[in-house]
Length: 331
Image 1 (cartoon, rainbow, N blue to C red):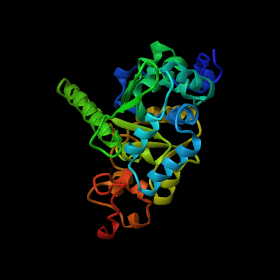
Image 2: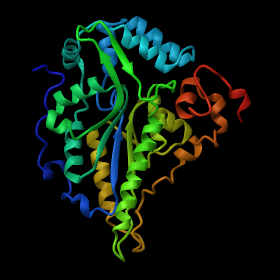
Image 3: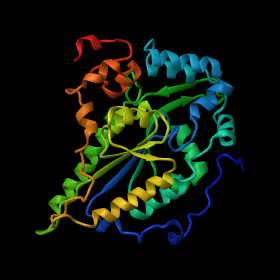
Image 4: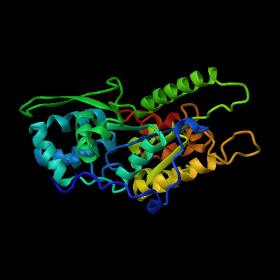
């Protein structure tokens, strides 16, 4: 068994983890749904980069291609197609390399077990390839636990001999290939439909459930999805946290998914303490943070002129593209 991606140790007993008694999902006043990026968030490296560096364009060419995205010379989707198209390796051989080099967040397995126990749906939203991510999760968590995670990512056409890797984009019309904001909005609508159905079945005197959407990420490509969340977790020291600090956007920092688990346990406990007896959340108010106010299509903030083109396109895809620099017409 390769050492980098090995099955996690069984979660420690609740008392050792400082956890709380499990609360059956049916007893919760509010539905919590978690969404997470994968590369750099659940895994500590980028799955694609490991493959490209060894079996594709190589690290030097990959860095050049990344710079073309950052400069606005080419779109994310265009560059990604070239990177994936450079691969010439059978899928299983490529995964063998990843299993040796890829490191997973040490707290992720325990966090996933916590979500399953608490009835919290967990979804991966990624700009990567779904077959690659599923294979990694199958190996790391085991197929049974991996199957409980919904992966929202791009599909792929991979020839058996590995001579061709072709992404099948979720949003082919978008320069992003996968517009994470669209996927998050679709997910929120689905959650709202579920809540609306429960509301019709509510008895007199029962309190309405208010869904809480959580997003976990690390980089600029997570900005579209992050702005759709009620609670944002950003990995410490990386670009998403830097952007939030620079622009005063509320977020919760984390080093490991164990930090996220602890905070969600606090949220669950705090939600059980009602304010004024009206069943309102004690601290976290869905869709009431600064993030969406400064990120909306109709409220592009004045500091946009100072924002790098890559970040403008990810944060306001409706208003900007990587190919066109139109900030001079903006406030």
